[in-house]
Length: 355
Image 1 (cartoon, rainbow, N blue to C red):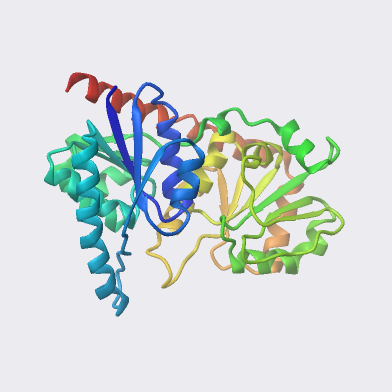
Image 2: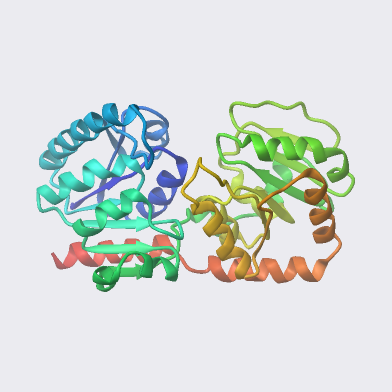
């Protein structure tokens, strides 16, 4: 049985899409190289995939004294990954990106192990830019991303969409309502700030809650760091796990950040989005770009400088316009038909079988 190595991590947005690809490779031995700290090990090992932890240093685009320490972690991570790959002898390394992935990609290249990579965001991140020269195939979520990768890599690029777990393609609105124990005619708005929450989104919802609960049951993923008390038509949840696909299917609208995982999961289920992208110095602008793509496609509304009044007015307008809701849902679903997990896994199997 051939072995396929996976790498990527640091956030769920780099892990879950990779696991979506793993699910399409049942006849291969799979291992995952991720960070030896953080969430990586816990998520991966729950799926039964063998996990190998390595030191991981962040790749910052700004000056910080922590950069000097993290350079040493990247070097240590390279040698740790090389040792793992040399022993396990995988036929291929698939990288889902993130700073964790850089040492394994470099280590695989040094051992002449073929490398495939995937970029979820509209423009390539730093880890992807570093990996480009060492790869045999480059998968991207958006057609425009191909151009941003550079002319000399065009023959390696495949537009695959973003890999999304199969559970989202089988989402059940009835199961979502059953989880909440609410009536079939209750209208739901689902608020997502990411698995760790988002202070801006959380604060806006708290300010707007009295008005929102007049027309919607509000289901709010608050993040592990913040807890809010439930009240009439308000369901705060620290973290939404396996129920997420079903809650998306039950929702009339999703409000949240525009990380690649969030927008593609919503598109796969076919639910309209109101996006509040992370912006400013804390980001390279990828969420603004992701949100812009879905807004241009007619699948999302974007609030770049939101306040509670604008939020409530926009949601009220959406709630009272069924034609707009149906139009946005159809636009989202059209994007979501692109099955990244199936596309990438097929390319992996084809490459390995021919090697």
